[in-house]
Length: 316
Ligand code: HMG
Ligand code: MG
Image 1 (cartoon, rainbow, N blue to C red):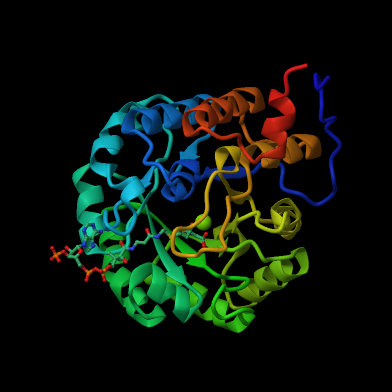
Image 2: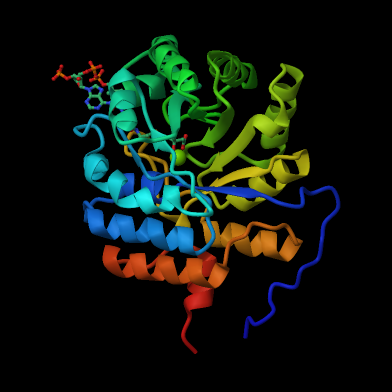
């Protein structure tokens, strides 16, 4: 019996509202073994919007050989046009690594893009075939052109808390690349715990260090993968620090094809359950969202790993 639950009991010092940056259709589906049909992706994104999500990362304009799961970006993106034109428009960010990717995104009228850097050399090489500095040089003209076009630009930063090849990643190393992304002109930074090894003290230390170095909290989002079950605790730590943008994927879908130890992101349902309990507004209807993840899980042929989805969809 979950009617009226969780009971909303506020915790001091938290933001009144959080913007969820939904990444299931991109971070989630890029890691599926099976290629999901384009129509299913389009319906998934429409359902996410129907559940109240207002920032839904749609796809990536990367090399189709690198991420075949998202090779249908040209077919998918126009199927979402109605979402961008409606009375309450939904932002549909897309990943763009280079000038070629930006051309493809612009040709379809994308307004929100994300470049994606790495705090470590190993992942920069594995994910972008570049050193960290070479990838920043690749992003520079992309961000400049996007800004000229008045697009919104997010800068992802991966491996902020640990790297599968290099182990612990020093905070100063993360801060250097974070600042470089902001200096390129990114509007927002998303701190990626790509392999899910962060713990709350580490999160707060990195956030404090970024503030110290001039990156304001209101420009920072957090992107936790849930490999070790720490994503919600890490999110709570970030909220206590004042972060109001949290990435999550419906049903806990996801991972990263170029970082083997990455599992799914923080599940959006688990996040919304916690925020509902804290009385923090998200605008998301948890029932509709859960139904969406159950619907998608049926199409993927396996149950959602989200505890909240499982609990709420349990038939008595
Ligand atoms: P490269 O092989 O070095 O590419 O890959 P290149 O620049 O040498 O170009 C080679 C060929 O690719 C050329 O074609 C280009 O035109 C073409 P050719 O002249 O030989 O016929 N090409 C493209 N085609 C279509 N779209 C493009 C594109 N770019 C070049 N955009 C590249 C470099 C960056 C392209 C490649 O490494 C790549 O696509 N990487 C993407 C990897 C990826 O998407 N990873 C997952 C997202 S990151 C993530 O999940 C982490 C995150 O969630 C945060 C976290 O959790 O930490 C964001
Ligand atoms: Mg990710």
